Amino acid sequence: MFCATNAHHKIYSPKVEEGRQSLEWRGHFNSDSSDSLNKSYHQVLETEYSWNNFWQTEIEFHISDKSETPLDWEKTEFQNQLQFLDSKYLASAIYFSYNFNTSNGKGDEIEYKFLNEFSSENLKFITNFIFEKQVGNSASGSTEFSLSNYLEINKKLFSQLKIGVIQFSEFGKLSDFKTFQNQEHQIGFLINKEFQVDEYEFELALGYLNGVTKEASNNSLIWNFELEF
Image 1 (cartoon, rainbow, N blue to C red):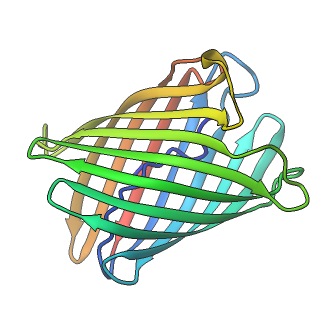
Image 2 (cartoon, rainbow, N blue to C red):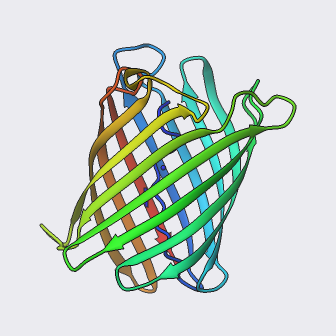
Image 3 (cartoon, rainbow, N blue to C red):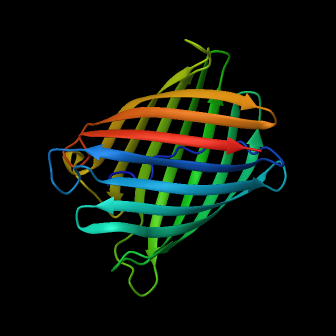
């Protein structure tokens, strides 16, 4: 599921399904009044595999196009997720990623997250607490904190579509939070459709995000296409 503004607009479910293997293409496109963000976009190619019912590994390749750079292979992420709680109403996991940055002037990154999913008969709420720290000779700054949330109505609507509210926030460095207008906050909606062709499962999601603060992109179109086999 769905995490420029927020790195790649994906919200991670803590749930791990043994034997699950998938390929994913997702990204976002910005429309903004500032030249630095307008028409910039970010794409991610990802593959993942669940080794058992609590451990999942992912590899992501990030490609971006910003005003100050041409099309750029920005970074490669190696991720592991461990689910430690799976009850009727609550699932939780921890996530760790080492990100190899190929962008000039930036150090590699260590990223860790606390993932939660609260479920009921009618609603599902997923929240990700995200901490990111640069490492290596080019590293700068302290640990940064972000928060992502997704609220989905479990009932399917209009030709088996699901709809939800999605939100991304970047607060800045833990040692020195920015003022609200200098933080990055976006909120919007996501429409999701799942279907199956033979033994292959497909998921298509399209969404829109509106910038709440001046540092966030005014408008972002987000998408996610996933093939599970």
